[in-house]
Length: 149
Image 1 (tube, rainbow, N blue to C red):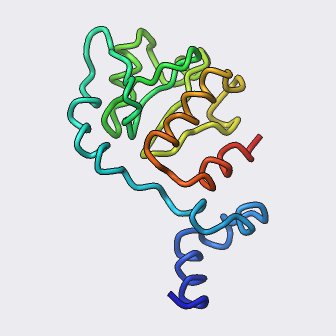
Image 2 (spheres, one colour; image 1 turned 45 degrees about the vertical axis):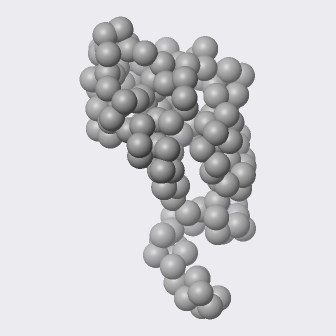
């Protein structure tokens, strides 16, 4: 892809009003949305099933879910965070966020202060790092996530 075409694609992915100087300087691979790996797609039905009590996703193949402060990842299907919230013993997403859980939605960790009232724990950062490594996602994408702090 030539440089001009790549710039048009980047602008399509990240409209100018949403591009901050820090993101504008970030390598393209870090700004691109992640896609589920083949292993994630194969494990989708298994990891997204909400059991009672919920079982952690030790395989770290979740594309959506909640990460507890102790570093255990609980998976759910897209737009099923409310069901998982209830299964984990909380009434609302705001309540589970106040308890220190971190939301994973469509392969994006919602770690910004507008989603969280407390910083991530060391155990949560370790699980997130392991999730990136386990699934072979680009280091640049992980570094963009960590640069928000």
